Image (cartoon, rainbow, N blue to C red; front, top):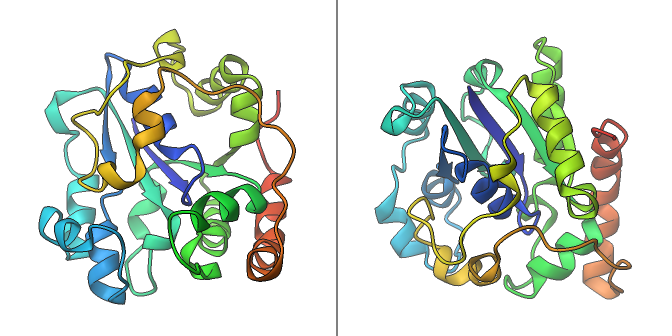
Length: 239
């Protein structure tokens, strides 16, 4: 099984990648379109020079790898994608051949967390518009994409992940509930900038508290993302 997990930044996406890669029957790929995205947009990101040399910059090369054999002979693979990396002009026909999972998180939480590490993000940087587009594309092509909310995962990791495995036809394995602390071989080269908290973790953090207070530019950004979040949230997996 090839699972394409479509997330945005600061969505629990790395923890989810670690969770499934911790299974003996899984491997994982970390944001394989990142270099292609940077090359096409010219955006400046932390460690961008290193990223551009570490990954293919041609999206067709990336797609060929994703649709080819699973690396290392594993039975299953978890593809961690940032939805905003799927720029217009990157072909999408291959997406229907994946098991598509959409990982969402309330925009206020995303904006508060992402803005602390990335100056003045725009709506296009946080993935909500692209997640909704990709979800609807997969659904229109007859796929049955599954939507999961990071808040639900943190509130009940075992319950939600059991339900996810059932929804996608995957046997349950409690190995997804914890992982060793520290860096992983599957980490993208950008891990030193972004993954410090997850490297200290050994499992999912507890339930989230109240929403962070935003004002000004940050509040406006979260408000702009809300319709896309609500579109997916209404379709989320419930337990």
